[in-house]
Length: 249
Ligand code: NDP
Image (tube, rainbow, N blue to C red; front, side):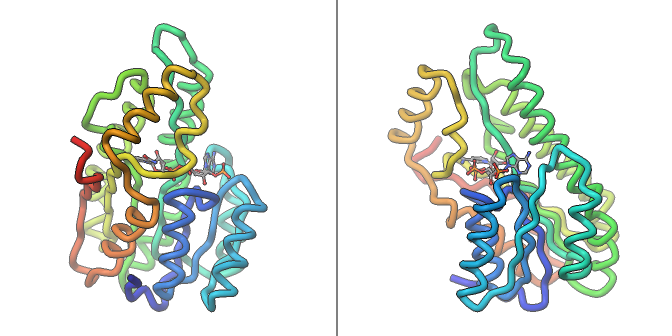
């Protein structure tokens, strides 16, 4: 299913795979021009080519959300002008028992899942506020059901997602009155490359068991929620969406 996002200009971070790639594809199919941001240039270039071949509008901008984004913002503005829809999706999930002291992983998750979300907010909030004076304007943060639930060996990951959920709720108090919708999406288990970065065999096994026993969503199903929320009439804000496989409790 597609939605009406005609004349919208979107940035999707983490568009190289999973939920970000599926979201970029659906936003473009729904009429938006989409800037695809991620570190793996070949992936986002390939996706941009696929979208263009389908008759959509998309372009790739290599970006690491943990770094300075001023050049990225310049490229986006030069290519498509100011943006009115930002999907803060880039993230990493690394799991190990906390007593193993993998502070390298903790830092990477904090830098990407929290620092990256803030960098992207800083990069595009001016655009979003300006866009809200003319029409719909959306900030979508992809958090996780882990913001509320406990998952053994994922203490730091879930803490980063709790930060995103709390940030979204508070941002609404600032941006909502300015006309910018803030939508926090908390997916449950979703098929993507996310689990592939876990380097602990036992934790990987646990993840595989959850995946099998609890069921899972496709990335396209989460993308559908993002496109639905951002295509509502501009005064309607679905502020907090938890999307789970029916069998995940
Ligand atoms: P993927 O691993 O498939 O996608 C993650 C994306 O983030 C990739 O495109 C990756 O691209 C990008 N990324 C990672 N680090 C950076 C960085 N420093 N700068 C820019 N881009 C980066 O996983 P998902 O699609 O599942 O994850 C998307 C979001 O959904 C994440 O925030 C995740 O926490 C959240 N989520 C996922 C769930 C799931 O079960 N899959 C459940 C709940 C939430 P590249 O490596 O090219 O930079």
